[in-house]
Image 1 (tube, rainbow, N blue to C red):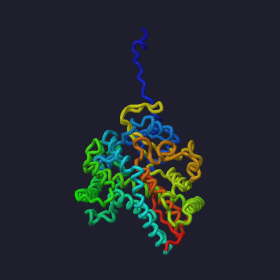
Image 2: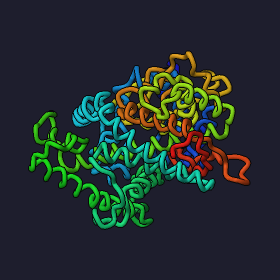
Image 3: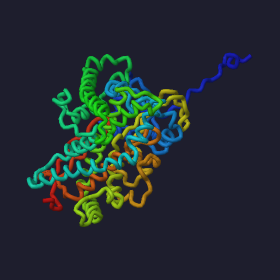
Image 4: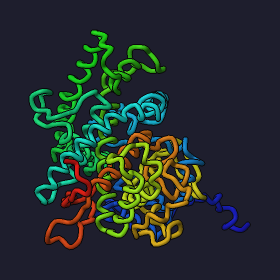
Length: 488
């Protein structure tokens, strides 16, 4: 009898895995991420393909860089990949991931998203805050107009952050957050706190990639910083909730219902199948502030920066905006639907500078993706930046060409996977309508009222991105405004 036959064993087939760049011991491929992970991963995908396997420390991660694969994950297998990976920063800063952005997919998340979509961020609710947008933008225009008299550069980045913080705070808590020191028992105002929170969300945390090295985050002081910011957030948010509870007890009917009022009404009236705790409410307030302030102001900043860099486009969009407004001497929100080129400019800026260039996800069960076997709890990164600059979908993808969106039905609502700046599927950004209304209205006003130029001596605008997981501008947008129409 042939010995090779008697001793043979059934051959075990290893599951097919995506191609992977060479990795180093222990750290895997972490060293290849660089200071701008979405750009480094885009470069790697051009060599290893639109679906790659990277080892982020001890965590295997699938990186997806094509519209087709994004569609597979966010449409075909949307439920399977509806979870978000665990993040230490989200756990410590968002009250045990009690918010909507980072909470695990399940009954709580579905209930919270339902109230946000149907009540907090509905089209009707967004329209009801029109007067707030108009008042705050008018104050911004007046302030910039005064600066024009000096003919000196202004920090437009700071102005936009303040503007959006004012709009969001009035919508969320019924008043502006003007300084926080004495009133709320914290040394920082909320704008500073939100910036620190964003920095911590983008900080490298050992526990997230090497679970057995979580102690390093303690020794380095990172965990201490997160807990300190969490306490400062408490000292800011608790008085706001107490203030709203007191007003509810007094039954003050003169007050227009804001987001906090709505959340408290949901809590007391048992509108959901879950009981909202105080921590849940605080986490959801944070979602509103961070999503509505940071991402919106950053998007407006990039729109204006791209226009300054491309003066012919600037001239064209200004001419079209001013033609629509005509002799009214005021930009109305009702004008925006007639500003097709402005909308194309905003879309093109979102294509090149997505607010979240990398979308994380995690599979809840094992699945097959494009012929690759992925076990449960596989982490996935959808590289939005790579998808939105893919030569297969976009001609001259690195150039700022708003005309590509004219007479083009492609939109950012999550159905066209070549263009998903706000994500797609169940975990797509629910605040998209709230944010885009602000972006378009603010940009229209900035272009209608002012002409913009670089400070004296600057030949080219710095378009570099800050390091980390977001795509914010590295340096402030300092520009000289010139009043086009007299307001005095």
